[in-house]
Image (cartoon, rainbow, N blue to C red; front, side):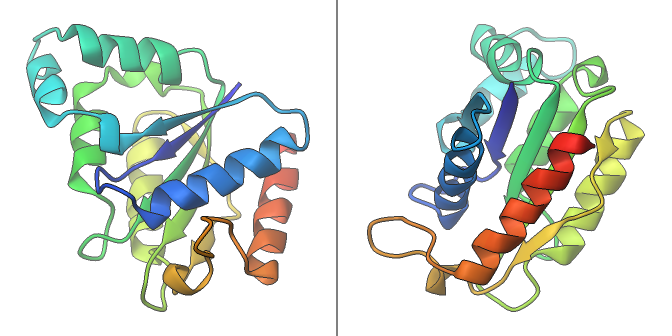
Length: 173
């Protein structure tokens, strides 16, 4: 199973729309997926699980989405030249053993022109520190607001093609 993480808690985000599009591409190949939408992850649950605390909701998220997956796809918007703090908070509260050995693909999302390249570099460093392996074909999606139709469908053919190529290589990785 592959877990797709929409790593922002912003409601109705383009990040979640891209995560849904990614899931559709994987589903069309018969790959089982789950989407972890961070807009439903409560910061309080993460905080309660930090510093040797235990939070049942947080533990459920890790057991449902992170632990059973051998691969993760992280869709990450650019927040101040990096990735969302809520996702970093989640990573910090999670025992690194749950990430160790996993394969990770990264997709950056931005309304500007860089597609969160720096944020994907930061995430790569964090995942490598925890013993996860990051697939080298990272996809920066720039001007995301111009690539999603009102019906939430990804509409940009070159971006869809880039995601397809990433998926093809990631499944072999």
